Amino acid sequence: MSSILQCMDCGREYPIQTVLYTCDNCGGLLDVQHDLDILHKTVTHDTFDRRLGTLDMPLSSGVWRYKELIYPEVDPALIVSRNEGNTNLYPVSTLAAWAGVKTLYFKHEGENPTGSFKDRGMTTGVSQARVLGKTRVACASTGNTSASMAAYAAFAGMEGIVFFQNRQIALGKLSQAVAYGATCIQISADFDRNLELVREISEKLGIYVLNSVNPFRLEGQKTIMFEAIQQLRWRVPDWIVCPGGNLGNSSAFGKGLYELHRLGLVDRMPRIAIIQAEGANPLYRAFRQGFRVYEPVHAETIATAIKIGNPVNYPKAVRALRWTDGVVEQVSDQEIMDAKALIDGCGIGCEPASACSLAGTRKLAQAGVIRPGDTVVGILTGHILKDPDATIGYHSDSLPNVTATYPNRLQQAEPSVDEIVRILEGAREPAMP
Ligand code: F0G
Image (cartoon, rainbow, N blue to C red; front, side):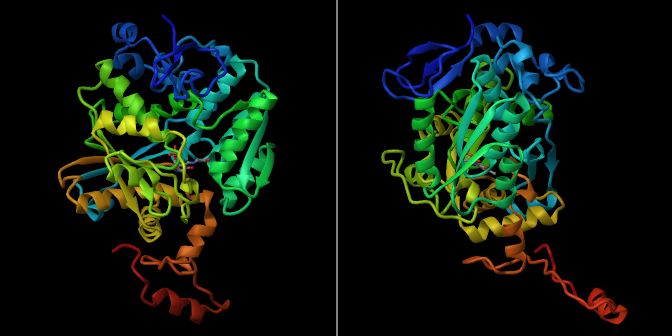
């Protein structure tokens, strides 16, 4: 049997080449489903280990290395890949001590070609657009999806169309989408409304939607879990900690981990901790009420990547949390920016939303949910250069409602040896606690 699309709620099946994002029957979200019984017999650790270091595209990609678990039937000639993935897993012992856990790694998805984890989902999404013969692709975005889609669309010779909120898009992201040649439309509506608009207009005009409501996006993004666990020599960490916005990434992680477990490639699943910004926390609120109530919120946070009040993948994220005995935590803008300063100060660096992984780990360790002896993999979702305004705003202490706890102040000097020597011999404020 080959891969199919299947509704996560009513189970209705559709051929893999159907252009559909939610079930015709009940409106549920769709999954790309593979035949796990066949894969169980054919796929081993060695299938993926022997591809490490290959120079041959597409198997050299950190997504397509796992082709059997992503899209086994796709014609390799139709794959649009920029060798995404293959990102580093950094052990960070100083930050582990700060967070209160024994072992902490950062999987740095900002090291993807356009600087965020979105490239992993975009290689699969744009490849499917090519399979379907589409020439126009579209998304609503808080920034990174648009940068990634614009790049992959240009690379594949398609038109990319992007709907942005008309304020608070990080400059690095906006400039990427413009530079890669996408049709960029700024709209006076928030992300949630823009996503509704893009879905409605795309339906009308036959454009292929590449937001994470598209199940092919999640197939690519689940490889973050495959690659991290392969880098740990197939040993399973206790926790995966990641930021949550539209909840595509955490949903993909749940699916990927579930599949690895079903295929016997791991002997247990790590627990997932999804971290939301306090001002954009609909999943956190639902979690606190045992998922009995779900209410969208009006979103506001300095971590603009996750400024989302009504995440489209909410049901899949709940499923991921149930599969992995997961938890949800929230962190303030202050906690996010302080954690970012510490990640940046290690020489690794990330954008604000990514720092939820460290801030959330610390909070959950302080609450005793993550135990001191646990091994944690935190996901850094975006590159430090995505949002320079937030970085400079923090270090110059000019952000609203955030005080720089770990500032590295920019110094000014006249071209005078004496003055500069005085600065260099003066006490420097400590970057680390
Ligand atoms: N971190 C970064 C840097 C992001 O750009 C996003 C989402 C997330 C975390 C949250 O991931 O939505 O899968 O829960 N950015 C989207 C965008 C919404 O349009 O770029 P999620």
